[in-house]
Amino acid sequence: MRVVLAEDLFLLRDGLVRLLQAYDFEIAAAVETGPELSRALAELEPDVAVVDVRLPPTHTDEGLQCALEARRRKPGLPVLVLSQHVEQLYARELLADGSGGVGYLLKDRVFDADQFVDAVRRVAAGGTAMDPQVIQQLLTRRAADDQPLARLTPRETEVLELMAQGRTNAAIADRLVVTERAIAKHTANIFAKLGLEVSDDDNRRVLAVLAYLDHGR
Image (cartoon, rainbow, N blue to C red; front, side, top):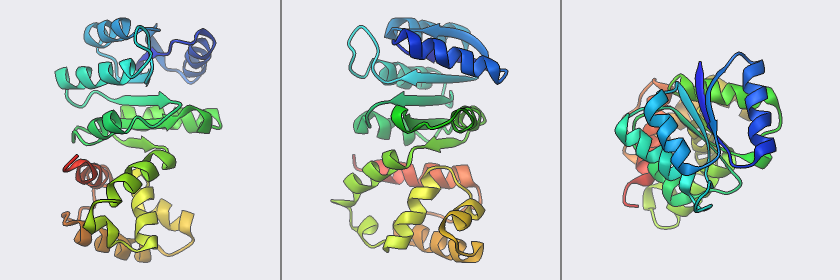
């Protein structure tokens, strides 16, 4: 699996390269600036891009903008974002374009190698890998002025957050210590309240929820 990695801090970039190589990933390129990232994504066509949000020369949202532009050129290009913060505007655009293969992890909440590698693989396969705090911030902001989200019960909101992380019904049931049947009922209620078609396709349902959250941005 070929990876393009973008991180401006040398030690972190080198550490990520070594980690991914230890798990049999091929590093197609490891870059430190936005222009280098744009070229690498256009020329190398990797299986997945692992991208820091803030890259030179602007040190603002250069990395995320490059990733969005690359996905416009190649819809569905898998992108896993690493950041210290939740950049809500661009995060919502990335998550809600409906192409799949997206992730957003907060650097200080990646606690072990297996967690990170699993996220890279999941995104490369077309799935999602979302930090719970990212989902929580997006949900909180959206719920403030959106009546359908406000109608969700606390348990339904909790289930929605776990769904948006890419978890299956079985995984959610295990996390909340309830039956899978109970989660299926909560899921049906969530889709009904949000006006979304019920689907057994985990990735499609997550993208549908995220697209809904982005509606009216």
